[in-house]
Image 1: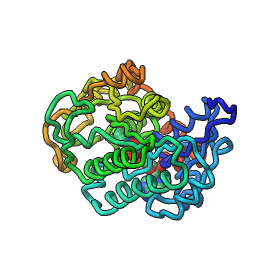
Image 2: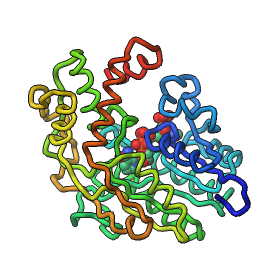
Image 3: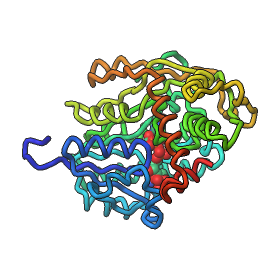
Image 4: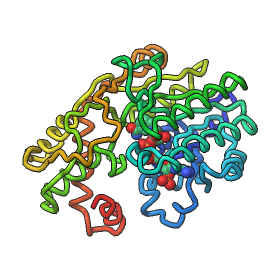
Length: 345
Ligand code: NAP
């Protein structure tokens, strides 16, 4: 906490998302006052759009706004007057970025630019975090990738995040701000969106176990990913803003597993054989599939942040399957659960 004994104030964009919800929990546990930017439409559909933060609503303050609206961000930062800004909001799904390049670019580039400009003008003494991604490496020239690996994005999403990274770096260097970027590899959890492959697998395992469906279609089963747990990655994000100097940092597990391995572990945990249900289908192959492996080098995070990732992949997958099984088995017992389950179908 600050030496002034006032609780620190944190402002999170993307608080309704996977990472925002874990970060809000972490900051509350550390005594922060937490403010979150939420799209106005979410207030009209709380049960659905705020389900990840439903348990926090009486302890955080939500402020309406959107990345595309500079005035709304200005008002939100003025109201929250933060010591730390965590800019997590983004169109975060790579496949959607192929389908709708323009809204991805608009939200991710202009949204980040808006946030940085408001930060510089209103609270330049604050610290700023930008949510970068391993997708910025796209087709990497080296394995594993580290903070010095050149960016070579292969999707509108990756390009938009490279732009956000450079905007953040420029604001840091041109205006002397404490602004930095995390370059985070894929991180998952029971709160991951259903469109992402890991959650697609675990939600299908639950529905297959319940006898609701008997088929799971995926893309390339031999694609490998560097997967970690979102809750743990948010600890690294917080640590980045506690350092003496701003530093961009790769956050990763440093290990890869294939989609096939993920399926095998998830199905086996539910007492099923993945080979009886999983089908590799061309239409789900990613348009940017390069055959290159995105795997991070965690050395800088370990040496400078003192952050180490040591959770076995089985623990992450079992937690996700358990959660999705509980959603399926309690369906129709509560309206809220049913609404969440409906997203899974
Ligand atoms: P997520 O679950 O998809 O959450 C995205 C958040 O952004 C949601 O709260 C969403 O609000 C908000 N948002 C999207 N567009 C917005 C807009 N125009 N105005 C205001 N809010 C908007 O994503 P996540 O997994 O938590 O990821 C958090 C950040 O980390 C993202 O920037 C993502 O690109 C980056 N990242 C994630 C991973 C990963 O593996 N998860 C890896 C690297 C980087 P609604 O609820 O209203 O849609």
